[in-house]
Structure formats: C-alpha cells, structure tokens
Amino acid sequence: SKITLISPVWESETVPSKFEWQKMGEDVEYKIYIYDKDNVVWNYATKDNSIIIPVNIKNTFVSGKIYSWQVKAFSAEGNLVSLSLKVQFKIHDPE
Image (cartoon, rainbow, N blue to C red):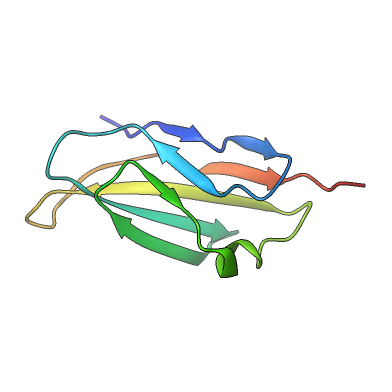
C-alpha cells in the first residue's frame, strides 16, 4: 500500500516546519526526501511518522517556489516496503 502524506500538501503560508505522514506499522524506518525539481535538497531517516525540519534547511526554501516531498518506508532488513507519491508544496509569497 502507498504511504499517505498528511502535511504539507500544496500551499503553505510559511515554510513548513513539520512534515507528517501515515504510519505503516512497527519496525519501519522512513526516509523523507525533499526535492527542488528533481534534485534532493534534504533527506533524513527516522522511525517516527513525522519530522521537524532543521532551521538551516528551512532557511534555504524560497517563497513562491514549488518543492515536492516523498517518504519511503524500509523494513528492518533495509528492503523498500512502501513509498508515497511525490507531493508538491509551495511556499506562499507574502506579497
């Protein structure tokens, strides 16, 4: 089954701090990827189903630009067990 991304989806008034997705069961490691077009700008591995982005990474996001993110789930043995679709988010330009 596909992982469902909870937030952020589409437009965000501010740079999102927290990224959250559906839990896929126990003993799963998630890898989150944030993309600028096809380039991975940040990735991180966690056992939780949410992540707070470090401030230094948040500061690299540009208003009005479209990014996307994706989560992949791996078993304890390191096998890919599920992945989400790539979901876009745009940081709203305050103008």
